[in-house]
Amino acid sequence: MKKIAIIGAGLGGLTAGNLLARKGHRVKLFEAHTAPGGYTAGFTKKGFYFESGTLSFESSYQVFKAMKDIGVSDRLTFIRFVPRFVGPRFDAVIESYDDFKKLFLDAFPDDRAKLEGYFAEVDKLYRAMEGFSRPGRPSLRRMLLSGLRLSALYKKYENETITDFTARHFGRESELFRLLLTLGYPDMSAYVIGGALATIFLDYWTVKEGMQAWADALAEAFKARGGELLLRSPVDKIVTKDGAAVGVQSGGVFYEADAVISAADYKKTFLKLLDNPALMPADRLEKIRTAPVSEGICTVYCGLNLPAERLAERLKAYHVMYLDERPGAEFRDPDDAAFFEKSSVWLYSPSMVNPGHAPEGKSSLMLQAVAPMRWMNDWGGGDRAAYRDLKERMKTALIEKATAIIPDLESLLEFSDAATPKTYERYTGNTDGATSAWSWNPRKKFFKSLLKSNVGTPVRNLWIGSCWATQIGGVPSAIGAAYKCAKKIG
Image (cartoon, rainbow, N blue to C red; front, side, top):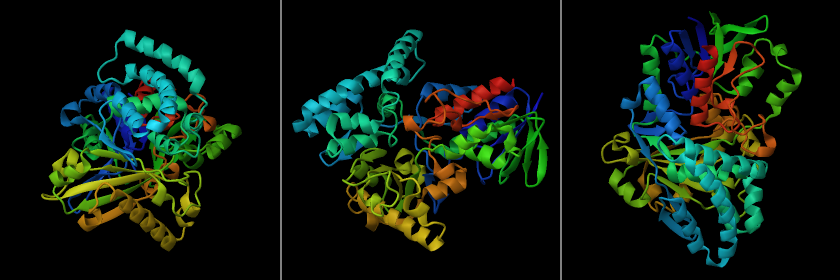
């Protein structure tokens, strides 16, 4: 039996904690926030429940198997998303990739030849991922065929960004270029386009009870196995001796451990928490310091004086992708004060998923948009008044854009609040509010591979058990890293 210290009670930390406690290890899980969950969490305000940030996940077979292993499946109801796409020339609830293609071909008849060329390439990427993305356990034959296809495509598309890929087909000044760039992370690898679309149409899930219920179920299972969950307990430092992690310090108290798992931000693990940076090669520390992370998001939380069924009439789907990228919407320009007036916005209603997420006769709505990195002098350069003004400007812009879907939205608002990348960094610890670990740009990789899980570190007995163990992160990556850590520790 070993003593294990885990930093961070997101899905990675909670999964690792359960797996190790199940083996009989003595596990302490340290969480800085007042509740477990990290990005995969939620909160209630004035009787309205909202997801904190994460709305969905993919790789359902892997996720469902993990929840069954841990024993929380019967406490949760996982439901599929069927999204609605709205744009300047189209509006439809789309249930399949083929319907998605038809939507664009019908909406842009003058660009049919270009679209057919675009989809001829995307088809290959999509069909290769299809074998892994269908719900249920993939057959060995399906995995082998998909693996062979993906291997060949990886070599061809890994280092091409979605920006360059889309520009090859439509040119950078076209409407189609702007719209099709919104289907994933800015400048992500073109190789990932197929996976993004396969996720949306085959393997796009949420939790009916809410993401916080998911985190709470895992936390309760962990405690039932004898694990100790310490909330409001940020780790001050990772303590080392003779080149190995020997425990952590929290609140000035040292907790001895045979192994330490950081299920937290990778940069802060080594740049702020590690007590002896000399244990890391200097070039690796510099790489950690300078490596870019994935873009953050802004979220507006709206409590509506409108029954859920009336909101459903307007939204038509839980999740609405309003693709309204205007000319000049440039996520690379942090100095564009009008960015959110020009960007696309996604709408999501927790109370449509579960009417219990809002008071009777009312409904909840979330608006989300990708944020330029360190927008407007990093959200005001530390000036509180400037930050409040920028936050209000973003919130007003996203609400105004959402009136294209819900024309009377502003008159229905009972209250509204907002989160910025600064908010997410404060509550999750993720550098710049990163939503999915490192940058998805293949030319700015921290790890050599986009997909490989890297849980080991140069410090003995220190492991990475979060989505930061992979280049592009996500819920499945966090769970996968947790399993790998548990196996390594034994």
